[in-house]
Length: 271
Image 1: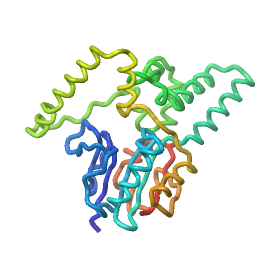
Image 2 (image 1 turned 60 degrees about the horizontal axis):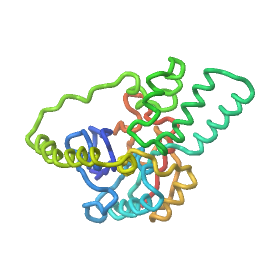
Image 3 (image 1 turned 135 degrees about the vertical axis):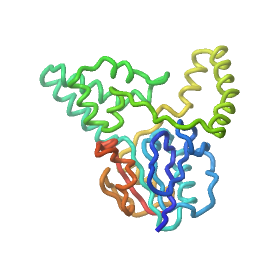
Image 4 (image 1 turned 120 degrees about the vertical axis):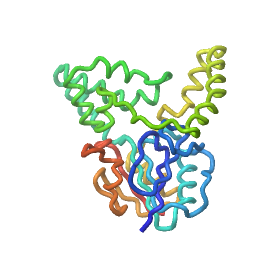
């Protein structure tokens, strides 16, 4: 069966297998459709069999999340499956409290470093007012034991924190060049705006840029949000398991044998 697949807010995380439509506000990957997802998506009703979205729903308020999910339901075929991956507030909270209890019982540099990292996972992307926040400084200074702990928690993406990988070289096409040229006026406007803007205006613009987290979910809150948007048969899954036929072949949640987000919340629901 030729499934129609939508990768929503894909960033640079795309699959080379399957009939995917990749969508994001902006992406460094050629072929991604740039679209304002907060407005109605430019797709007909009942277009897609599967919708996948990883590390995106937490960047939306509850109202924005409900609006986007209702639009996702509109473009999905009846019986289609949505798969969402997002940081798990419950896991983060329990881990934070467990580390805090250990530190209260006995001082430990290793546990203190883990505690500091989990606090960053919880709060930094919510409260930061500049790109990267405190996370970049922490990653640059952490010791090897803490690096291993971070990789164990974050998975594949964390391996790029400490050994950055260049994007594969691609042929510069006329279409790609045209996209770059079209972005020049916008970049110039942003530079000019930053030059004349106050600190408060720059921070406000950054916080609306899409980098910050505007909500965090647990299984209960995400289930309730999906139900409000019209989905049913909501189940918790993991990186390896899915109700989507042959999901593992797409290589989105497990990359080269390494899970991307082993402690994330994986949820699927039917349209």
